[in-house]
Length: 219
Image (cartoon, rainbow, N blue to C red; front, top):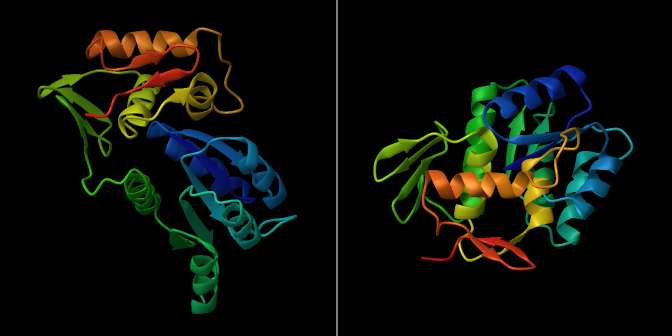
């Protein structure tokens, strides 16, 4: 799961990247609205954490541009403004949730999990696919009630694929969702992760669509 943090406060932005990275998310960080708006038109993200008071383009404008371009990426708006008018403006512009600074990181993480869950069309906190159960809150994976140990990126890749059964992901999209801008990616890294997932769970879990990408078939 890949998250874009758009926050111009150095301390808060760095802290969010560290906290979310510890939970297994791939996190990219931008500090102004213009760059964020451009990135959202060319990159793939699962969720955006968006500050309102940004240089070059404010958060509300970034959000309005996203929705005008038909982007359905969940957006969690952060702001120091607690006036009801600002909350209404954000929600009317297309925000999915709203968090007023200062806030507890654990609450932000819970809201992130809820937004990702809703975007995947799930009511339950856990993900089930055939004999696999994923517990996102604890980042645990079970097959037939036996825990399976995955690396951080194997786990992220599994969650991405299983959360969208029947959807074919291209190799480029999966790499964007697994690796941030500062990560070094070797040419066969994605294939290695897929191989390990198949070996640790079962071989038919992830199917290769030749010339296109990978898919977890709909049940």
